[in-house]
Image (cartoon, rainbow, N blue to C red; front, side, top):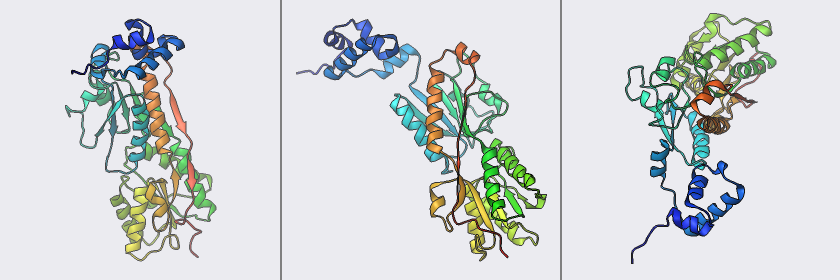
Length: 345
């Protein structure tokens, strides 16, 4: 006996509607009445009908996949954001393609393929350092996949975005150190050209100046959001005679590298220097000492970016060009743990 998979005609027969109504319900349910939707979806369940996604995509010129461009997949910060994106996209029937932009450049022929509607239905960009020309160098508004920025953004490209107020969050971290009595506070920055670095440094510097304090250049350390740059900054701090009693680090990884190196040098945190991070990675609460840090709602960022992209994908290219560009800013919290205390002496 040969098994025959249920067809759209079987669904139409059980539902008591035309095959055209079934097709319309499955592809564009918002175009049919609630009663028709109920009949068709009940018939689908009864017959065991399965949509042929590949065939449907060929007809609609869609891929049922979105791409996420991540600046460094080795960074644990991105894990929960990607989880939030995948959760929403999976529920909507989309696959998620993830690629690391670290090795990419303007002439990398692999990068532009993600920008085309022939390859992906949409794009979530977590890398603010990607050049505007690289993001626009293929096709026209009608053929480019809709794009949403998450966490980071490109200052020269107006696109929908989901972010936090990095400037205010950094100021909040600095105010915490100031409230503890610190008057000599240093800053460990992220990558020099990164939009997050600029925003967080601006907020930190503004809080210091608002308190009537100074931030001399020698207390500003170069970093790149990695453990290694935190280690280098700690060695610099330890070797200096005139050094701050507290450090604001623009990422948790740098804060942990800083503290870890000081532990190797028998310097106690926070007894000899207080340290604040930014991100609230899972390990931050279990680090020694537990890290005071800015908590970013990373899963919420991922979910919001995915929902925003789905909304943009439902618009025509003309609508995307002429409607206001949505920009969502999510709230953050300062989580106070044991890496901060009043200054020594």
